[in-house]
Length: 92
Image 1: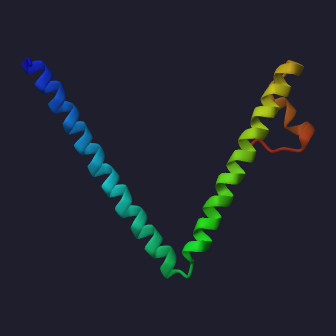
Image 2: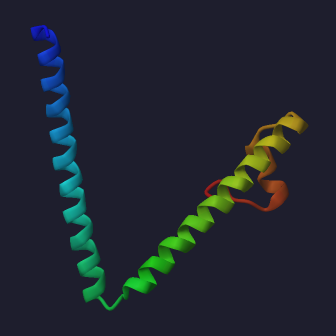
Image 3: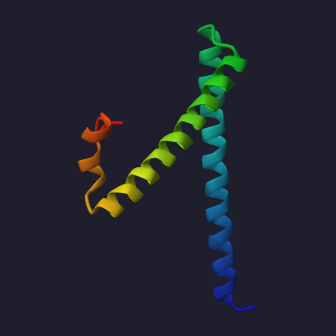
Protein backbone atom coordinates (compact mmCIF):
# COMPACT_ATOMS: atom_id res chain seq x y z
CA UNK A 1 0.00 0.00 0.00
CA UNK A 2 1.16 3.50 -0.75
CA UNK A 3 1.87 6.11 1.89
CA UNK A 4 -1.13 8.13 0.68
CA UNK A 5 -3.47 5.21 1.48
CA UNK A 6 -1.94 5.02 4.97
CA UNK A 7 -2.56 8.76 5.36
CA UNK A 8 -6.16 8.39 4.18
CA UNK A 9 -6.74 5.50 6.57
CA UNK A 10 -5.07 7.41 9.39
CA UNK A 11 -7.16 10.49 8.71
CA UNK A 12 -10.26 8.34 8.50
CA UNK A 13 -9.41 6.63 11.78
CA UNK A 14 -8.70 9.99 13.39
CA UNK A 15 -12.06 11.33 12.20
CA UNK A 16 -13.79 8.27 13.63
CA UNK A 17 -12.00 8.73 16.96
CA UNK A 18 -13.12 12.37 17.07
CA UNK A 19 -16.68 11.30 16.28
CA UNK A 20 -16.56 8.65 19.02
CA UNK A 21 -15.32 11.22 21.54
CA UNK A 22 -18.06 13.67 20.53
CA UNK A 23 -20.70 10.94 20.93
CA UNK A 24 -19.31 10.10 24.37
CA UNK A 25 -19.58 13.78 25.36
CA UNK A 26 -23.17 13.93 24.10
CA UNK A 27 -24.01 10.71 25.95
CA UNK A 28 -22.60 12.13 29.18
CA UNK A 29 -24.50 15.40 28.69
CA UNK A 30 -27.75 13.51 28.12
CA UNK A 31 -27.13 11.36 31.19
CA UNK A 32 -26.62 14.53 33.24
CA UNK A 33 -29.78 16.08 31.81
CA UNK A 34 -31.78 12.94 32.64
CA UNK A 35 -30.36 12.92 36.17
CA UNK A 36 -31.37 16.56 36.62
CA UNK A 37 -34.91 15.91 35.36
CA UNK A 38 -35.21 12.90 37.66
CA UNK A 39 -34.03 15.04 40.59
CA UNK A 40 -36.75 17.56 39.68
CA UNK A 41 -39.36 14.86 40.14
CA UNK A 42 -39.89 13.61 36.60
CA UNK A 43 -40.09 9.87 36.05
CA UNK A 44 -38.47 7.98 33.18
CA UNK A 45 -41.91 6.81 32.06
CA UNK A 46 -43.15 10.39 31.97
CA UNK A 47 -40.13 11.52 29.98
CA UNK A 48 -40.48 8.61 27.53
CA UNK A 49 -44.19 9.39 27.08
CA UNK A 50 -43.38 13.06 26.44
CA UNK A 51 -40.75 12.12 23.84
CA UNK A 52 -43.20 9.72 22.19
CA UNK A 53 -45.86 12.43 22.02
CA UNK A 54 -43.36 14.88 20.53
CA UNK A 55 -42.47 12.35 17.81
CA UNK A 56 -46.15 11.81 17.05
CA UNK A 57 -46.77 15.57 16.93
CA UNK A 58 -43.85 16.07 14.54
CA UNK A 59 -45.07 13.30 12.24
CA UNK A 60 -48.57 14.80 12.13
CA UNK A 61 -47.17 18.28 11.56
CA UNK A 62 -44.94 17.00 8.72
CA UNK A 63 -47.96 15.33 7.09
CA UNK A 64 -49.95 18.55 7.40
CA UNK A 65 -47.12 20.58 5.89
CA UNK A 66 -46.87 18.12 3.00
CA UNK A 67 -50.62 18.37 2.34
CA UNK A 68 -50.51 22.17 2.50
CA UNK A 69 -47.63 22.13 0.04
CA UNK A 70 -49.52 19.91 -2.40
CA UNK A 71 -52.64 22.05 -2.08
CA UNK A 72 -50.59 25.21 -2.67
CA UNK A 73 -49.14 23.70 -5.85
CA UNK A 74 -52.61 22.72 -7.09
CA UNK A 75 -53.95 26.21 -6.41
CA UNK A 76 -50.81 27.94 -7.68
CA UNK A 77 -50.20 29.83 -4.44
CA UNK A 78 -47.63 29.70 -1.67
CA UNK A 79 -48.22 27.70 1.49
CA UNK A 80 -47.97 30.98 3.38
CA UNK A 81 -51.05 32.21 1.51
CA UNK A 82 -53.02 29.17 2.72
CA UNK A 83 -52.33 29.73 6.43
CA UNK A 84 -55.08 32.35 7.03
CA UNK A 85 -57.64 30.15 5.25
CA UNK A 86 -57.04 27.38 7.79
CA UNK A 87 -56.53 29.67 10.82
CA UNK A 88 -52.85 28.76 11.06
CA UNK A 89 -50.08 30.93 12.42
CA UNK A 90 -46.79 31.10 10.55
CA UNK A 91 -45.14 29.76 13.70
CA UNK A 92 -47.33 26.61 13.56
